[in-house]
Image (cartoon, rainbow, N blue to C red; front, side, top):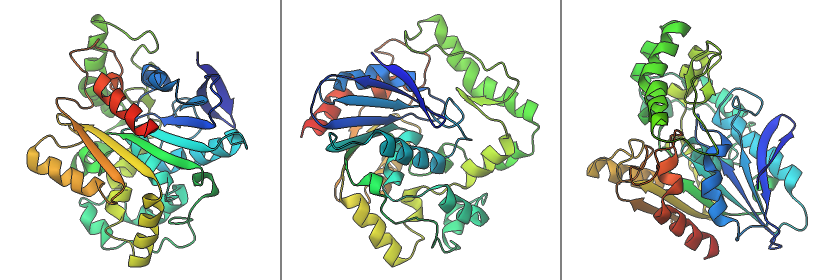
Length: 337
């Protein structure tokens, strides 16, 4: 049973399993997905942890506008609050943008770092931005947080190696010129109404998708208060996998050392549009993700961000990766290994 809680404006759900093993799991959702979307998944690990936490995204229950840097800062705050001498190790898990936030957390790529990079944001090509990276000194980037010390393993489900595959920079530039009303109609037509249609088949007992009625644009369940700010941020954001190609050799070495200290499992699907489901592009994705020898990548056939037709067509966009029995089995082996 998951109990709801709020800490300094951060919304979370916790299941205290009663197991006294000194190990907890914290799960970060993908963009547009509520924490309830992942209950079925993390419940499969209830015999492995003393407590499991699910966190709502900024703007979807937790305070703040959604961005990766704010997710990282809120994760650090939660760990500081939940940590105790009885906890020996912390495992982090995340899906899609949540997976990206989890691995980025290790390097403290926070909102201050993102603000320093703002002059490189909203360029058409990420490679151009990487040639002109400003100095990131003083932002805390590439310095180890105390909250990272107890982190042992990371379970990452389909982390994007670039936001350009999710929010294409060319399209984002064009959409920025549209009105809020037009942008809302586009998202409803391309994203939200197709997901609403699937409700005709079956809905989750934990999560039921509905169209947002506030009049604001929404991306699944993420309400976008300022669509131009959102598009500028997503179209220009450089992932940790990209930024490694532009930082100084000393910063790169420091970042890779932080990542190499942890055990990391990445699970993706061969049909995933975020993973670029063509053989050559899929290899490129794996090369981009495998930045350290301690990162293990498992590709599951016929899986991805979209719904798994072999299982119930839940309304949330994450059902396929997070309820697939092969994905769960691989995760359990990794956790207990």
